[in-house]
Image 1 (tube, helix red, strand yellow):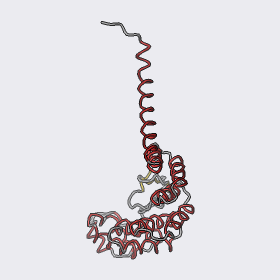
Image 2 (cartoon, helix red, strand yellow; image 1 turned 45 degrees about the vertical axis):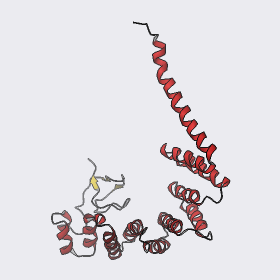
Image 3 (cartoon, one colour; image 1 turned 60 degrees about the vertical axis):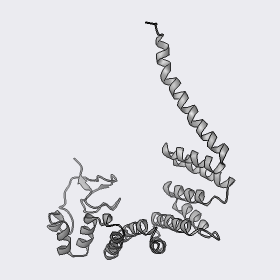
Image 4 (cartoon, helix red, strand yellow; image 1 turned 45 degrees about the horizontal axis):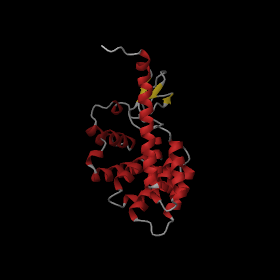
Amino acid sequence: MIPVDPIWLLALPLLFGLGWVTARLDRRQAARSLDPEQGHLTESLAALADGDARTALKSLLEAIRERPDALPLQRAAGTLFRRLGEPDRAIEVHLSLLGRPGLAEDLRLSCLLELARDYLDAGIMDRAQDSLEMVSASPDHAEPALGLMVDLMQRQRRWADALSALDRLARINPASSAAGLRFHLLMELGREGDAKSLCPDHPRLNRPSAPSKTLEPQLCVQCGFQARQPSWQCPGCRRWDTIRPVT
């Protein structure tokens, strides 16, 4: 057997890591040499995969400066502004895109949908609703628009309108009928008989207003929101039946 110096064994992980980094940089450089827009998009996607939205946004803005006519990149930049907690800047970007003459219809509807999300994050509910109503009229974009409409109506505690939007959504995609959500909307509307037909064993049928009060701290198992009192709906993510006592 040929003797192996232990130093080489220690160096193997380092050599492997250097090879991986070199290959990744080569791929990025090759993409940029073919198309500046595609190159920046590759960098942005890589940054997003690493969880670095700021770096992704920087790459997109550089691409937009080089290609101001690249409308899909501008739409992506607006979405990243919203993800970074700057819905006002996202609104500016998407409104600017919508003001472009000759904008393709599919891109216009996509921008309207993103604009509705911007307005929701900014708390501008009336404009969010206007945008969603325009998008929901399109068969190709109605499903995500109606999903956001259900969320919007719940935020405003407009239970009848939320149920109506959910009905429209279920006609497009029966799998999205969401029996649990429908149950709680019916309970909020005082329609216990209809709600019972969906979830006959739900504990809310015995306690319509709120779960039993307790001194135990509460936590949403979906978003981690901490609540002082139990409730059927999480105030943070607006999911139903997700508040649990902390054990």
